[in-house]
Length: 370
Image (tube, rainbow, N blue to C red; front, side, top):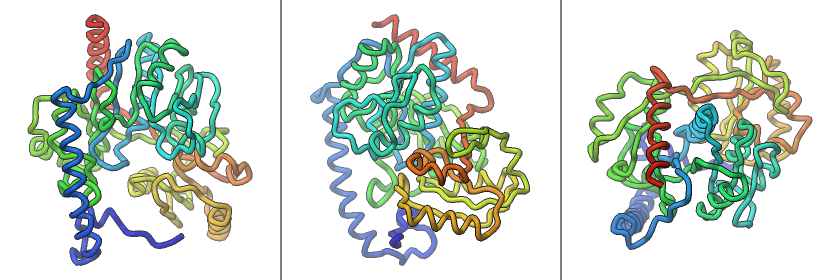
């Protein structure tokens, strides 16, 4: 695999500030123009020149203002299950990042069967479809079209709009914004110089904020006060909790306690590989090798063979990866036989009851208005 620019170091000015100077200069210039476009676009929506289209049922947006890794996918899954428990019929609509489909509407799951693979649909929508039962998952560039399909074809009465903070064409009744607790100390640059998709001030559009990975640092409340200056919004906290380990073909689930004291060969292609590594360490594993690939990486046969050879050669007990990575490996059944997948879920802390009450009350209020 070719050596790539370490954008994490550029965004955080990590370590030697003299590293990547030419790249930082170019990125800063591009950020100036990007910021102008973003601000102008938001101004057009804020002043109703661009219209947000409203659908016939409540819409919950799950998004962020930073690049990747805040935990949107576990949040979407948690929300869908919560809504089902309270008698709603949710559907998930997504743009489908990484999808190769050219169709305006792609039904990933009808709630019963998964109809498209990850290469066609994108790894995250397929992961969501794999985890949820009786919840349609639909992707497409235009959220209005996918939302109408969910309502008219599947009878959905609540829509969960995945990764939609910046997609303002669709009106959202509840705008949830996720902030990775560790990224709050980063520099306030927009892309490509920084990790921000839009300026911090746009948090003012949030109806509620969910801080993720709050178990990884105790310096939370003070930083919230420094950043969230735009308006008074409820702030909820969450952690990513390891759920279980399963075979790559989704067979033979085992408790995560099985990993304690075991030697593992791990690899992943996600936005925050350090979070995956930390979970493995917390679970008491002995990591013999940890291979990192770019986010949403598509592994070829030679790379998988190299991983297989490394795993066998170091005599590890488990070959472990993430769920998102496993979605991109479904066309290699032989590799899946030796692969173990760590499943992680979002848990609201100190209690999920306050968050659930907030969501349900907001939805019922929206239904009354409609």
